Length: 319
Image 1 (cartoon, one colour):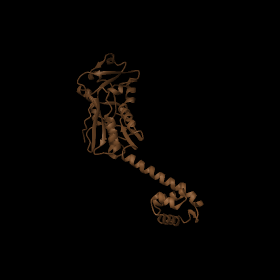
Image 2 (cartoon, rainbow, N blue to C red):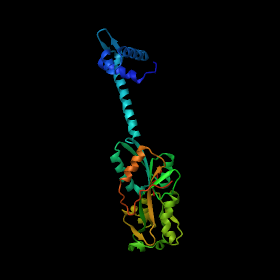
Image 3 (cartoon, helix red, strand yellow):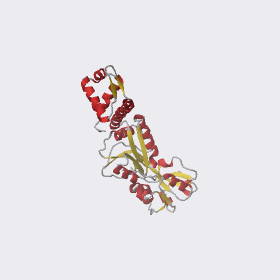
Image 4 (tube, one colour):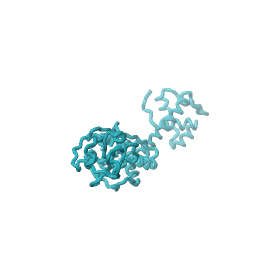
């Protein structure tokens, strides 16, 4: 069979199949009847069989034509749907958005996804959690479209838009001698094992978390490295050590863990939205717009200014 069948052949065939009259079909298609008859004969030649049984008084479908009719209608229907979907994707109304994020920002991520989904209900959202360094890597590689990171350093080709800030606090076992009050000096934690994420997960974030200890003259040595804040907090509750954490991860502490404010200069942690510089795709811009509509609720000032010069498709959860 000749493969050069064009869309007009399908449209012409369906018009004749529905009208069962070449004159009415030609009028419907706004073409001359002889031209329509020629196109149908050409289609039949390409298919290799007659699709219509013609007499001087009637036109009817052959068995092959009757079988071909729903298939031709389906082909044109799928094409129309595909063209509509392509347009919706191009306008940012449909498609898929990959968001990489740090698990300690889950509340921030969820409220922005909720705002976005209200505006773009037909967009599929795929989530990937990981360390800040992983999120940024995924963004650079193109496996993530948007990233939510904590205390990220400027990256070439990446825009960092500050979302919110929050203070760092100490988390101690409830039976710790210093846990009886509401505040603690970092120096009081010098003898305690430190439980924290590895520095490779995000050097800047690690340095911020340990800044209060270093300011107190403590030689920072991590006794237990963990891949997520939930595990860190559970180890503290079990009496295995202490940690310095962003305030938001201490909202629901398990029994055995106590949150205390740190004396001395306040150290804050910043959460950013990360996007590839110059990424003007409608889906990404729609997510940014939805994010900007969300009112920050954390305990530090929220800034919206874009700065900066990624998210990571991590499998382990994180900072």
